[in-house]
Amino acid sequence: MSERTKRALVIEDEAIVAMLIEDLLEDMGCQVAASAATAREALELAQSCDVDFALLDVNLGEGQTSVEAADVLRDRQVPYAWLTGYGLQGVPPEHADAPLLHKPIHPGLFAAVVRAIA
Image 1 (cartoon, helix red, strand yellow):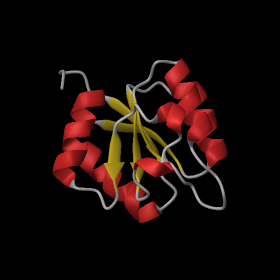
Image 2: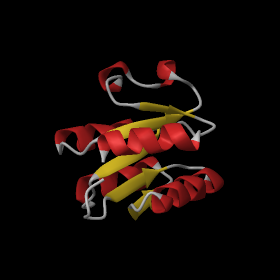
Image 3: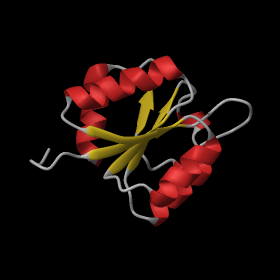
Image 4: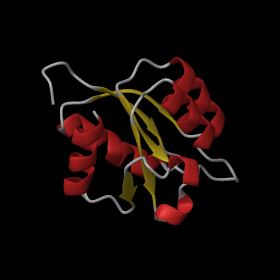
């Protein structure tokens, strides 16, 4: 990573998983600029947040997803990766080119994906 601290957007509905992701990012020297747990929050932050990259859980509970936020991030040319326990079949086909991290999160793979998109 460059000397400038990379700023991340974290979209994850499970608080424990979000804390793990934030800890892993901080251990890598990244700053968590913002986090969201709902589709509405995710969309608002994707539109307005100044970040270098984003990590998105696909399913945010109660039928919500982060797909609209991913659409905005893609349009803004902000790199992102998916975090999901559903594998590639859980990712919308139009976003299948984004890196995929499987849950439970493996710290080594997590670091590799973050380095690739940050």
